Image (cartoon, rainbow, N blue to C red; front, side, top):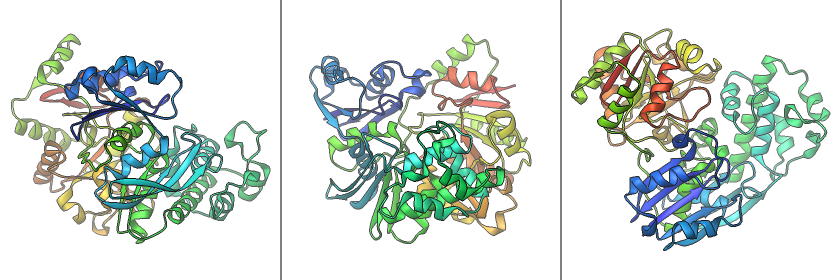
Length: 507
């Protein structure tokens, strides 16, 4: 059975295909189209997923469309596009829940889905058992943790519904002195006290005089404390909503919050915790196909997008009249990269299939050596152009990660944070958040053999098998997808060298 899923409409559209019980492709439209969504359907990701799955529209048995969607006629359009398929509409939070439970390693789990509004639901608690999902509790807008987080995002000077990740990282430099204010606002039973908001205030989150009287003037120190207080209150609330015992699966936009995931992992309340790495609305495309399939599927490394062969890469490089060197073997690629990193170069690394979700897992990455004392400063100031409190992840071979860091299983997909071992704190000082926290990416040979080999080669040469890893994207764009995207980002930034497959470019 071949199932095509469409989710994230209208703002974060994505497509996924399950072919005969195996995930064949999953791609966000923004990554492949390189523009804001203007069409009703994610046409380019649909076409690319079909190509990767080696299927025609006539070979699709079921099209699963996630609510909400912008046009009531969309199912009719899909019937015309996929004439032999059955059209299934999937509720938004069911798609979130399916994306987490059916991709998890658990046969039985509590599933918690939390976002801003969804389809007017802003959350739900489910029981996953025997390949079935049943809703226990639903939370409806306006009682939304996601909305509170978005309001604070705007209050702190960031963009609501886009920069919430900045708030979580800012929180690591503050103290939760206003935690009780947010707990009172949220309520024990997740009933938001609207007296903390003022509908007449159209900026800075719309908080009321009552809120401002409680927190006082908002200077830089207060900003960090507000972020820390919100983070602490949200973690306590989510832990309460999730209950205790057994396994826990998470999805929905709020579950992109790696500090929240780490708090749940470390709470001791659960046997295991799994978070869907593509937790946001785009991930509902994956949930759509899994909900129809109704059984567990191994999503593996979540690198489910397109890859590009040597001829395709070479054509772009020659068309752009660029000078390059072709490296004949994998060993030569790895050795050249290790030498470049050892010379304190910032390296762009584009190999294999593109990742699904916003995080770079070693196929569309920018890399630097922790042994370079200026690596974090150069990455933040001259390449990513972002705030100093946003630290970079440390990629490490999974089998030796425990030597350097204490972290949970969700480090496999960069969905949690860990703690640096005391004896290595000085080495990773530039990447350490408050309380010795550090973003950790545990790389297995099975998930990413080339990147794993690079890490070990770096360790053999320098004694440290760890590299800093950040996403290969600039200026708020999504991850680079194709060679032309990589070339444009490389030459628009302070990156020193780039590997695109076996092609090596140096400025």
